[in-house]
Image 1 (cartoon, rainbow, N blue to C red):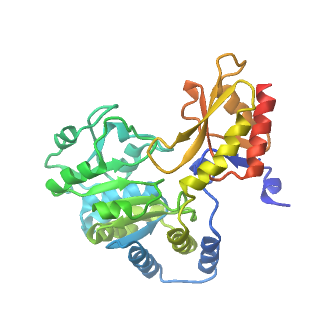
Image 2: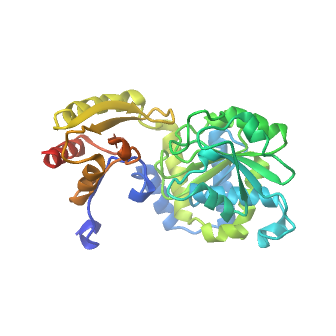
Image 3: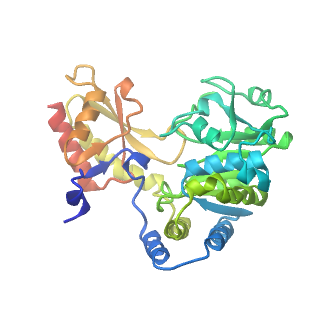
Length: 365
């Protein structure tokens, strides 16, 4: 008996992407082997945390790195580090009025809910959110005008969740931050290129260990040594509630070793797999289909399915019916209000694609 049966769980076909609500991704074999080693051995944990970070930093070409239990934890810990700025007193008294610089400036269109609100993670670290610009735009001037004597850091979100239209670039945000001697914290949780932002000189870069990297539940903060040291200090404070186990630390190390050699699925290969899926989807009544690149510009290609107006069901109803059966089929629902359902095939094999097409035919007929 497997755990689907034992716990009375549905099987899931994940055409949504690397989403936390579905367990994010399939862990690589090397990561599983590294986790097993961690499970069966003991370590001086402070030493493991520090040296695993140094090892990863060496692989990436960063000054330093530290493994945390999620990218969300990385946000809170990074903000706490910027408020405390290396103070041991702050570690034990993180909300003391001694620490006046708490303002974290974020473009308004990037203060998004990615499964939890960015502003909540910033507040958890003791920061005060200051929004720059408007919901549909943020210029360099709008960002800069929000800086004052209580600003602790600039915060930037690189994500498909965030507004892309009329948004200043990471390079420009970094330039402004450094002109004012402030660090830039970059939430790049679901990004794929680990070295791109290091080359730009970003101070603190946050990645999910379980998304593109296909490691266990974990997160990675890397960048400038001074700031990473301050983040690591938080393990004796609020970081205690966000600690990560030895098995997941080593699991992420193993996953990164694989990822830096193999990388993610190439856009060319993904489009080749997607082409047949799109042709099959086009045989489903009342649907029109096209290839759609990721809105944030990543080399990720999806099938964008529009439910035609003459269909007896709308996109939201189709999405709900796809989830009802076993296996439950999960899609990207962000554009359902426009009548569009997106299918992300990164974790979908050919057999599962056939199941999706068959189920859609049942629903639409």
